[in-house]
Image (cartoon, rainbow, N blue to C red; front, side, top):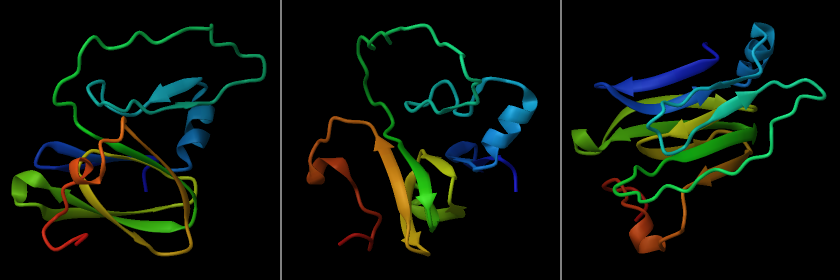
Length: 147
């Protein structure tokens, strides 16, 4: 199992899985940081392996002047437990095209439709873009799911 896994279907990057061991590999490489999402992704996920005393100069991030039709992505950090994530492709009539298993310490960036099955008692942290648009506008369920 690779530390960084890209799940690709017909040329589309569906998910980036960053396994818990990725930080160990970063530290062993001698690098201080690395990013594992493509530059065009709305969520940019990086890892840091910093030494005591390292400093990142104080800074602000400039706002984007205007965003249109920006893909909505989600980020999960699995603190404990195990999850099976089913990945769906909207170009294939919402067909399930892949599944991944993730567990304690793993990180996932989702870039497609998905469903979750919790295989154990699980604690996770989720991050997605806002602002929240309300239940009716926020999601489109795959046929037969979520009704």
